[in-house]
Image (cartoon, rainbow, N blue to C red):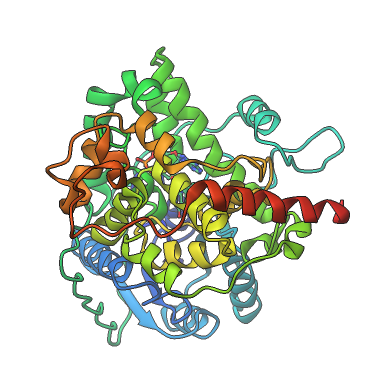
Length: 448
Ligand code: FAD
C-alpha cells in the first residue's frame, strides 16, 4: 500500500490544485484529506471569518464525502495522522506568510516522511520574480513587468476519482460558528466561486477599468474572498482573462499582480507584517488611540464616505478598495493614529483578510510602505466622495441617516441649513488636521 496525506489549508478546492495531483500520484492506494484546526489561526477575527471558514469546511467535507479534521498544533497533529495512516508523504501548497513558513518548517522536522510543497496560492510564487542582481523588487511597475515576463503555468486539470482514505478513529467535529447578527456572508465554496467568477466576467470585466473606482456601482469582482480561501486559483482566472482583449481584462490582471507583489514584499521582509516597511516612520509623532478610534470603527466620524465604508465592513466583512484607501488615510492623517490600529481592525473584520495585501495596503496609504503613496498626499474625504461616489448612492446605501439627502449635500451634510439630527457632526476639521499631519511629517526629515 502506498498512501499519502493531503493537508489542506487555504486551498480547499479540487480544480487547479497541483498539490492534490502530487498527493494522488504519490499515494495511489489512498489519500487522507486532512484539515488541522490550529488555534493560532482558527477562531481569529470578530467571528465573521470563523463563520465563513466553518461553512466552507462543511461544504468541502460534504463534497468529498468526509474531511479528516483534527485539532491541535500542526507539528503534533500532522505527523500523528501520517503515522497512523502509514502515509509515505504529506502534501501541501506552499505557504509564504511568516507564520505559515515557520509552521511548515516545524512540521517538516517533526515528520519522518517527506513534506512535499507543490505550488502556492499565487500564479508566480513569492521570491521568483527578481531583478538582474537576484534581489526582489521594491516598486510595483517593474515587478509587474518582471511578473508578466516570468509567466505562469496553465491551470492544472481537475483531479478526478481521488482514492480518499479515511483513517480509523474519530474525526474532530467541524465547529459551528454562528454568523454575527446583521452580517451577510459571501457565497461559499469552489463551485460558488467559479460560478460567481464566470458571471462577473460576462457582466462586468469589459467595463472594469472605468468602473472599478466607483463604490456606488459595486461592480468590482468581489473575488478577494475566494482567493483568500483558495476556492479558486489566480492561474485559473488569468487563463480566463488571457483571450479577452479589453482594457478591463488588462486592468484586472494588473490588480491580481498587486496581490502577488505584496506577497512577494512580505516574503522579502517578513518584519513588515507588523512593523514599518520604511522604518523612518517609527519616528513620526502619533496620537494614542482614544474615543476617535472607536468612532472610526463604528462608522460615526461625521464624514459620510468614511462612515459608509466602515459600516459596510461591519455588515459584509468586505469594503470597496477605493473606500479602504479613504478610511485608511482618515485614520492615519486626520486622526494621527498608527496604521497598525486600523490594519488590526481590518484583519479582525474582513472575510478576505490577507496579511500581505492588508498590511501593505495600509502601509501604502500611510506613506511608509513600498512604492508608497507619499505621506504628503492626504486624501480629502469630501473631494474623494464627490469624485468617486458623485450621486452619493454608496453613502445612502450604508448611512441610513442620510438616505433622504441628495448630492452634493450628502458628501458634506454639515453644510446643510438643517442637517439630519441623528447623524454625527464631523469629528475633526479636515483642513486643520491635514496641516497638522504635514507638520509632523516635516519633522521626520531629519531622519532621512
Ligand atoms: P477587484 O477590484 O475585483 O480586484 C480583483 C482582485 O485583485 C482582488 O480580488 C484582489 O485579489 C486583487 N486586488 C485588487 N486590488 C488590490 C490591491 N490594492 N492590493 C492587493 N490586491 C488587490 N485585499 C485583500 O484581498 N485582503 C485584504 O485584507 C486587503 N486589505 C486592504 C487594506 C487596505 C487599506 C487597502 C487599501 C487595500 C486592501 N486590499 C485587501 C486590496 C483591495 O482593497 C481588495 O483586494 C479589493 O477591494 C477586493 O475586492 P474585489 O475582489 O472586488 O477587487
